[in-house]
Image 1 (tube, rainbow, N blue to C red):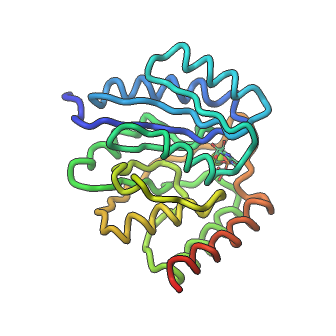
Image 2: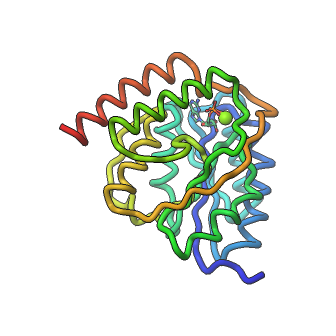
Length: 233
Ligand SMILES: Nc1nc2c(ncn2[C@@H]2O[C@H](COP(=O)(O)OP(=O)(O)O)[C@@H](O)[C@H]2O)c(=O)[nH]1
Ligand SMILES: [Mg+2]
């Protein structure tokens, strides 16, 4: 099969993912080498304390297409996504979580639509999270729909391919999970053509989940309010 004639910067936010980033990086390099004309992979280590930093630097030594970017202190998911986006040099940005809960083997499902769309975003076909996380995600999604008016099947699905031009020179604010709302607000404000694609989601095999912690949720509400004030009043 011919390669897609696009250039892709892929990044992964990683906070204490020492056992996950190796296999994830290796597989991403393999898939993108087969699929696209040109790419780079950026590991965004968000102040990890478990050896992720050293592992990311090692991977960058092994693979010429891989770079590691580090926060000395942990900032949060949004902080890591912002650093990832700012580090991307190619025309398209792809990102997924550094924990390997998505299968980068499904990147071709996104690439298939790159010629006709400006952003191709995943939704989890069978989300592998505890019930309370799914319930929270449903309520959160409904709140975002009411406040901002987007209709997105799965806001926080960390499997997205987007044209970089939408984010060039844009100052993103959220340091926490609200970053995904901010990304969609930029895409929709600029009338980007968005395609949604079902992808698989797997349980974590290593490391700890923190996306549902009280700290993460409290910050999300605070940053949501700030974003709403900035965009809607
Ligand atoms: N939760 C959290 N994740 C971070 C942070 N910085 C980077 N990440 C990465 O963001 C991704 C999602 O985190 P995870 O805890 O798996 O969230 P969940 O899958 O929504 O429960 C993982 O790849 C983390 O390594 C942070 O400060 N907090
Ligand atoms: Mg996860």
